[in-house]
Length: 579
Ligand SMILES: Nc1ncnc2c1ncn2[C@@H]1O[C@H](COP(=O)(O)OP(=O)(O)O)[C@@H](O)[C@H]1O
Ligand SMILES: [Mg+2]
Image (cartoon, rainbow, N blue to C red; front, side):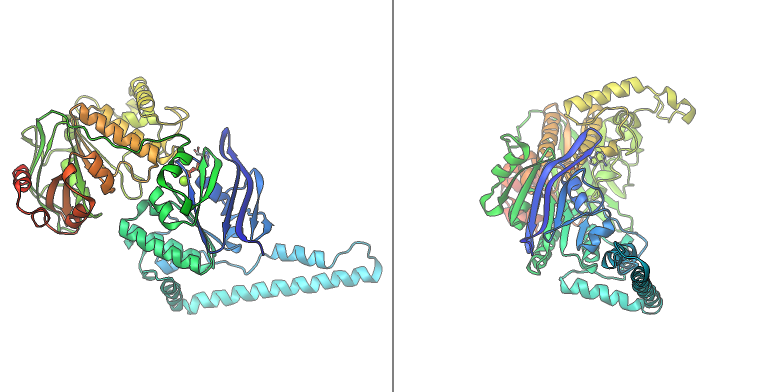
């Protein structure tokens, strides 16, 4: 048997004029984790989609366990033991975990047509005539009949098993989950699951089919630090069991932590494969981007002093009717970036939404230039100069209309008339598209959005980084005084992320107040002037960025108050005075 579980040779794939993959070679051994690294749009997903049967390569060959294979469909891939966990999950929300797994179970043990072709080759007609031809035909007929019967039998057995033995399917799913150390309740409905549970389900589903070649497309983009560690320990376990694993990511620390080797794609080409032990962040970045990259974030002090937003004793309920944030107070000044740190779900979303007027305020005040805006309509709040962009966990539904072009998305926020009313649909053709197009062109140019055009291609066709730049661009072009942005770099590659940090810093220099809800503490410590830490909806404290460490922030995020970490020194008094 070949040393490699998977070998891709000379793979080329084009979409119209876009060359997504250009003569790519890639090898993965059994019992190995290979990281596939590259910026957005470098062709990672496309390459893996060919291995999992979603696309067919224009050129090149695929070898599985040393044998050349034609993978024409996801079914083919499944038969070869290839399982892919996609970036956007493919689950039915209303079904239980077990049903989602069972839904995809093969209907037949084999493809009859393939078997028939094999029978034909076993009993050839060439050069035969008379009696021998007749007996050969009889042989073929007998064997094929037997094959049909066994397929029918399989279907019947399957039917009865589904009808009568369904409770055991839960147990079977649970067993696989237990074997690999997953935490999965097979009776839970997908709609009740957290993102990480859905991902676990996708992995168990693939294992259930017996996959031993596993592809994960940016699996950590939606996970918290703790969940990532759990995923990694599962991957290590699978590696020990001899699985070949390909993990797509653009996070360098993850590559260095989990992989044995790393293959880097740039603009559709393989620009190098190295052993992870010989790699470091700088080397990988340069391979990925093709030039030296400055991985520095500047946080320059500004000398604006006006208080833009003053939150006083704010309490907001969540959907279940309990306090999502409780008695939160802080000030946001002109020309500063105030970070909000916290474990996911500790009230960041509700804080942003209540300021933007999307959630009712239970008690407390939101003062904007001295005026209480609590209870105002979202549109009025936007018109007053407060903009919000929130990138949710799944990155979809983030405030852009996917089927509309960049230009039309620019209009979305501004096409109401002066009185704040929507124009009637009949008037829609007369909406000012010229301005929108000019605005779109400006955003595309200034933020270096890569798109074929601004008025035809729907934004959902653009890569994640570009979509997020369009979103942020639109918000900035409204010239807000306050920008509330949550997770603006979620799922983005290095270059796009640094571009967005840069945009926020530039806004700050102009005197805008930025409320930045972030995930990466290293970045927050470098980018923000101050960081406010939330835990279970309460403020644990606010720290100056240059007087704190990641560990201290982590302690506060899990419930240790500021005073216990920093003592009762000067700094505390000042911060308490600030809110
Ligand atoms: N179905 C498609 N139709 C047209 N272009 C596509 C399609 N899928 C991918 N592309 C293009 O191919 C390139 C590589 O995309 P992709 O493989 O998704 O990159 P990555 O996963 O590395 O971010 C991009 O320029 C993308 O726009
Ligand atoms: Mg991708």
